[in-house]
Image 1 (cartoon, rainbow, N blue to C red):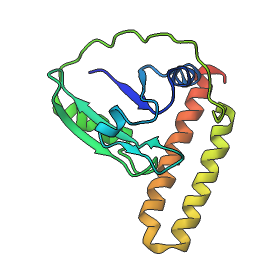
Image 2: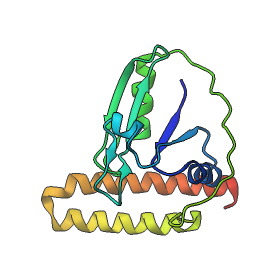
Image 3: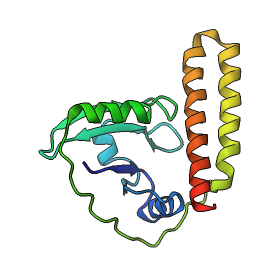
Image 4: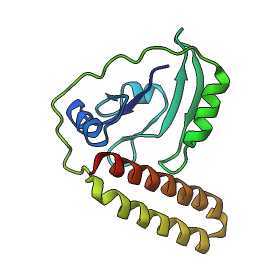
Length: 165
């Protein structure tokens, strides 16, 4: 199995993200989102000038799509544990992950520094809790966002502990 992400950002910005977060997988570039992301049904042209929707696609070595989930937004996505269980159940053969290509990283103008991620997630948790309390019909979705922010915060803490950033 090979893992890759796809973003609407240019190649150099993707390289900066891989470098900043020390991602162990490819981060492919689909500038503008009109290529691969649109073909996968994972492009939202109406938000912030066009962004990729969070999506997970499992493609077997024969090129056959085995799993697909495209979320509405960053809070509406499969959890890591759910995805791992799904992939394990498929019993796909392991494949070698080729080395990452190196590109001169250039962060985008709106790149969020690592030290700003925890406060951002805390704010998102607060907003989710408030939304769930004020709008009972949205409580389940607010609870999912709250839990997602907890997972993000734990990952950020682990990243910072591992890297000293």
